[in-house]
Image (cartoon, rainbow, N blue to C red; front, side, top):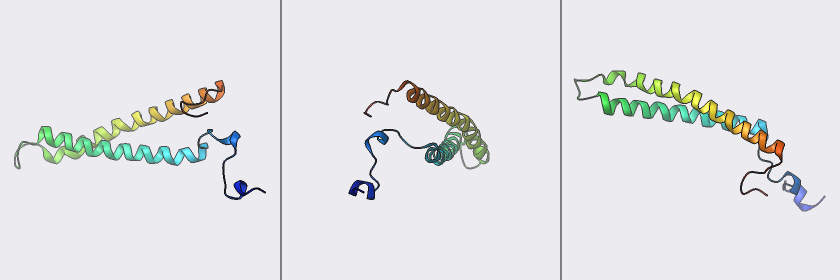
Length: 103
């Protein structure tokens, strides 16, 4: 057994293969969760900036609904992005083309 095998080094045929599906799923879930949270915060901020005219005026108490709307819209957009990324990955794997920068 070589010292590379003992330290978990990746052999040449495995280099550039990317992450396994079991490793990508938690990353996708984390990214999707982060996207929804950021969209919610952006929606609340946008609603407050456009609808709240003063402390007694406007509908500032409705800002959470604006954030929820943005989050609900961001979720399917994130799912579509994940599906597109997986389709592109599958097509590249089948055609034998490596992503740019990987040899």
